Image (cartoon, rainbow, N blue to C red):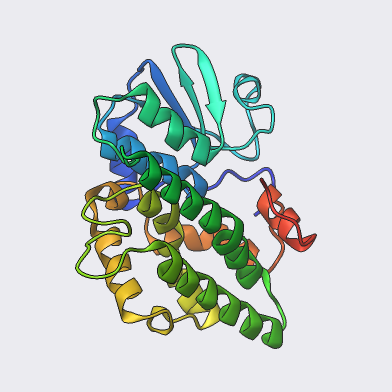
Amino acid sequence: MPDHVEPPHATAAAAETVKEHSAPQDLVFHAGWFCPFVQRAWIALEEKGVPYQYNEVNPYKKEPHFLKVNPKGLVPALEHHGKALYESLVLLEYLEDAYPSAPALRPREAHEAGIVRLALQHISNVVVPTFYRYVQAQEPEKQAEGKQAFVKALQDTYEQWFVKGDAQWARGDDFGWVEAALVPWVARFPLLEKHRAFNIDGVGPEFKAWAQRALDRPSVKATTSEATAYEQIYRRYFEDTAESEVAKATRKGEWLK
């Protein structure tokens, strides 16, 4: 997509959510509807039910005010009572601390909260970069290697960080941070199925069942656009022509921290 062309807007339930949160609020959510890092914080906002104003940031024409909010020019970012923060995992922490009476996504027990933070580090440092290496791989053998590595990353996530048994969610009976941090990429699995021969069955039946429950969660549905809308954005990743910071870091064998 040329730099001068604005990306399409959110679609489906996500478009309705944007509309519902267009009025001014003390909390401003600077976002890009297509970004999975944005969706992490967006899910948390919906789960917690706090008032917020959604502000779409054009990634190709960032306004000066937004660059003051986040000098990196990256979404997501928050402004709350005139004070700014950014980075998706930092925003998850902030929302828990700023709204202690709202429904909690972070465990209240200290050790369990630490376990969940370790799980989020694994998701961000292993699963997510493996996803982008898989997406941007061009040669058939590299795509096959990428598929194997991504499936293993998901299997390892389930084995290391999900409680086993009858638990509905990753860490027990409560939808929480693990879901918010991981499900945005699950919502993009249809693109992998179409372009990279991915099949969630290869990860395992328990993970597949969890993934479907997470996709059916109201907060996830409310922040998810149609696969055809994501297609317009991710086509550049599948062709390895994207110029986002994530895409450039992936080409260099690096990762955004």
